Amino acid sequence: MLIPLLLVLCTCLPDEKPAPVDAARVKATVETLDKAFGEKPGDRGTPEARLAAIESAREVVDAAVIEALARGLKRKDEPAVRSATVEALRTMRHPKAFEALLDFAKQSTTQKDEKLYPSVLRAVASHGDKRAIPLLRDGALGAAPYKVDEARIYGLGNIRDADSVEALIGLMNTLGPHKIAPFMNEISLALSVLTGAEGQRYEDWQRWWNDNKKKLEIAPQLPELPKGKLVKWHLYWGMGKDELKQKLGEKGGDKGDDKPDGEPKPPAKKG
Image 1 (cartoon, rainbow, N blue to C red):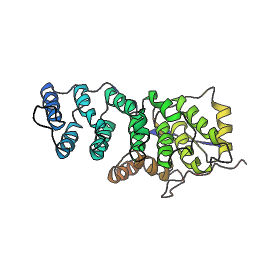
Image 2 (cartoon, rainbow, N blue to C red; image 1 turned 180 degrees about the horizontal axis):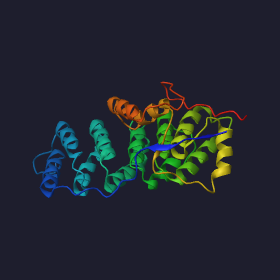
Image 3 (cartoon, rainbow, N blue to C red; image 1 turned 120 degrees about the vertical axis):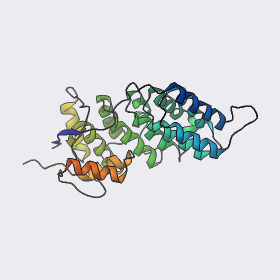
Image 4 (tube, helix red, strand yellow; image 1 turned 90 degrees about the vertical axis):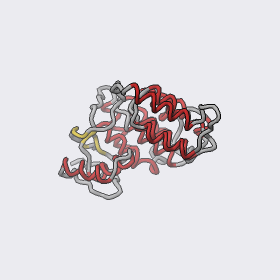
């Protein structure tokens, strides 16, 4: 049996229309990026300059800045610059940042980069935009490295839409009850985060899905979860330990599972 959970904690929501940025600041930031990326005649820039420009641009959330910044995704010979660009676009809450990441994630060369691709998927999904669901959903689990599958599963869990639940159930069924065990903890956590139900076994989630799929509504907020789950979830999405400690302290209480590894609690037995 799956246990319903109360809905109280906030999570990442789809990008809203960003606040306007001072035009002079936008212009200066774009010029700095242009120089760092060698757009100025006679100045090719340096990797160090590019990293510094990317870091300073993160707080200037504007379409023109994002366009200039996204050039870092093309620096195949500079993995640090590429990674910094992905991380910057992850934190910039703007539709253009999401679109740049989504386009990059769809490229075959990106998908072949086993070190970079999981962080790209995480960055895409952090925007909470349902347009990322097909990218995260398609393909069986187990065909790629674990970190890729983890990013797909948790990415779907961060997109608060009923289609994400259907996609997670579909991923679960790509392997079936006898082969899904290596991924069941991750799928259970993602499903709990989306639905406010708590369970561990394949059979319980399949039964829950059959009972609820026609009337499913996803709340805009993250459910109240056992502390272990909250720790695992928020750390994956980049919340700092001090911020997490403050968040947990503000909420107080515990939902019964305080395991340090955040392993989902088994479903309650029927009485």
